[in-house]
Length: 259
Image (tube, rainbow, N blue to C red; front, side, top):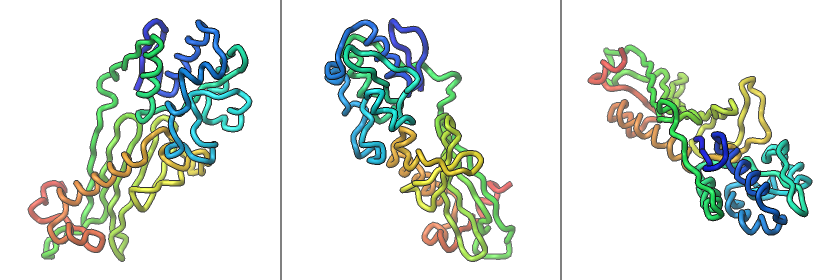
């Protein structure tokens, strides 16, 4: 999502909104590090349940340049701001879970922030379903699934639920792909994604959870679970719905969806 700030030229993405506000505020107001913390406290950005201990708890809205260099991937190091007693850099870890809190604090000191409408509904959620089955019309079990994919994308990231048969049984797999960073991950469960790779398949150390992308892990996991449940309910026969990890088949009366 993108935002506009009344009185400041430009359109700002989520991770750059706080930087734009603090740059403007500190240009117009002389303040100390402590005074600025009073206006934009650390809790606005997130707590330790969201941001991992490996980066020292939450990043806060901002930190000193010296401290932030140890966690450089989480701050706008190339845009330092000079206060009366310190040089600071602003966190880039913002998303739908914490940005509303920052906007509330910014508006309390006089800023008016509005959401920019996405171009041509580019952030509308889109859904796709692909199913490939064995052509086994002589069986009374329906059409056994060879492979299937349920895809959902919202303009920020793509989620995939995959159900396939490997010859011994049915396997379910779950995928995530962040459109902006081009980093993705796969897991045998909707929950607890912990490893992410780039387009070359190289492991990216800085990402160990969806919170490192500034997304909510529970929200993504629940979405993947819902995608799985809706696929099972809408496309599998009654026997498969009760035991889908051992037998996944499309009923004969839904043959037309396979064409």
